[in-house]
Amino acid sequence: MPNAIQIRKLVRRFGTQTVLDGINLDIAEGETMVIMGGSGCGKSTLLRHLIGSLQPSEGSIQILGEEIATASEAGLDAIRKKFGILFQSGALFNSMSIADNIALPLREHTALDSHIIEIQVMIKLELVGLREHANKFPSQISGGMKKRAGLARALALDPKILFYDEPSAGLDPVTSAEIDQLMLDLTRKLGVTSVVVTHEMDSAFTIADRMTMLDKGRALMIDTREAFDTLRKATAEEAVNMSEKDRLIRQFLRGDAQGPLTERKAATNYAEELLNLGIDTEIVPTISPNR
Image (cartoon, rainbow, N blue to C red; front, side, top):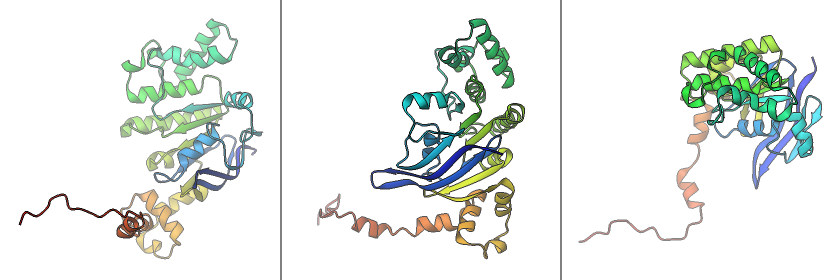
């Protein structure tokens, strides 16, 4: 199966800090790839590169066979019409009805007649189960409904790729499960390629075909959901004989309080860090003795 997305030796630096450090990743057409990792691991930065809002310091990113790392702004605009984005907050325009939010991309980027646009909007709302709420405003619907409305807007131009930024964030468990099932249903019906950035493990293991674990800007592991699940279910006795990398991934997947991730944080010497700051000022007590 051909690749919808191909990333090669992707590096991103901000000043002296390297946030992405040589990422290589292939995402096949029609599959759901989950990108996960702890806070600061680089997953949001990777997503911003995939949608063209950041340019790499080094490396290549191909979306549907087109290079975006060196594309012009006009070229990026053409590529962006081929994918949709569900933002973490939904990112709906509060001054517009739900229907108008979904119609906006069609009005801006197509020459369709207004009647055809109305039909397309109703089709997209039906796909996410919101057709009866078309005339409501974002302030009149729940958080889960906002996510579904945002997804309907992402589908407006019939994209070949969907990017999801923390689709379950801020939702209760039942609503989160509904969003997961909706994503699976849309993938099955529309055959889109899905790239999901999340730290919600229940959601990740429900929707993923393959998964990528990032740590310190590197891809520690890229494999099937089943391979990650084997690590997650490994017993403490089995974990003793694992490599540090596998134990780190296992701790993250399980959400354990003890393991390589927490050991790494504890290994930082607080006193030494303070001394290395190079502060020459004499430390004066805030309260002076009076006797």
